[in-house]
Length: 301
Length: 266
Image 1 (spheres, each protein chain N blue to C red):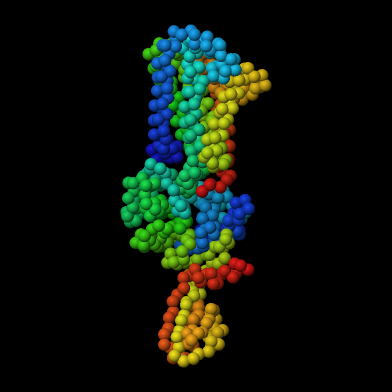
Image 2: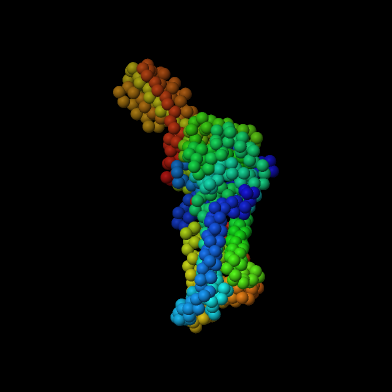
């Protein structure tokens, strides 16, 4: 099945008593793809990943990973999946290398050697007790344990939290090598900046609902830019109104302020240059703002 | 040592096991060392005879005679302290097996490997069996060794039988802890339920001979299966072994089914 999705969920729903943690999730991740799963803390990202790992039982709907049901056939799923928990916890009085060896044995393969190589690349000391490591080093160990068996799918819950920028670069290189081999990644984050460097597609989850899935290019075209133009002569606001996607337009004392998606910048700029420009600023907004602008209204509806 | 869940569990317990082994050996040595001074004290038996019947029934086994080595060991070691040490080990191990691992949040990591929840439960139970048999063996060897020194005239088959029944008793409560952990995932509850059940079972077995309405329940008590047939005199009771083993198997199945049907706590 060359085109079978690596991850496929149909109406996946999870509630804890009265609390609905995840509602009717339809999600698909293909081979070789990096899917960024974005949302604020508590939106349902961890719930989704733990459902995919068979740690949680779906309230309704179902999820398949590599063709196997995540709840009924989780052992099969785990053979080809590496998982990095949102809050990695380790055994007391066991060193990094002991964790490596234990999990490698349980996987029945010799991922331990690859794990040691990964630890060297991330500059992680495996000889120390895991629970005495700093936050950053614990995260490195969790990365090593998730990736050491070279699985086909990586499920990473906030993988770069606590990693310093240099290590993040190495981590990104590791993910690229993983996808070059045809591996897939589903990674969650509440920071868009880290997702946008890695992901091919981005899904946004809020309050337990997946409210948008976009390709990164599409998202970029929509990405908001804050534009400020100061004119020498008087201009009329109506000249700029009605441009597709332009919003928050205001004109005061010969200074124009507005927000515009990347796709409208060309038209906007041409309108602006009809006049004598004293000053011009254009800055890309955080993608989060873009998301809020486009999808919050839908979410509220 | 880290080849599978069972071995890793014993690896985790290595310090605790050394502690339990040491305390059990010291306990036995202490009781054996006191024996020579007890032997010459017939008044101890009188003391026991003068106790209210309910008290005697509760703290000493029926018909125990403190002036004989077997009676002395039964009252002092087998009826309370010995089982207590073994049960502290098994209940701690049983509660740590599933609920403890969830409590420390390592269960997500363990279950991210291709190891099923059933295998986790079964392998941890296996580790508990090895641990409790080790403790029973230490009890046996130190009793026989100390008994030889103090000239207590103990027989290997009977002491072996007593320690086997004691190990089974501890396993019943350890597996109960495992089952509560499997169903609920709560570590404290997994320790509390077996503790309460053990106290009730102990009292029921102890008071049943003097409290008539308790009598029908006596045979349900794991303590009755353990000591009701007086293993130090009569050796192994295979029917009691069968009841204990069945209880352990049933509780293990409950643990597996309970753990398989619920969310892993985080």
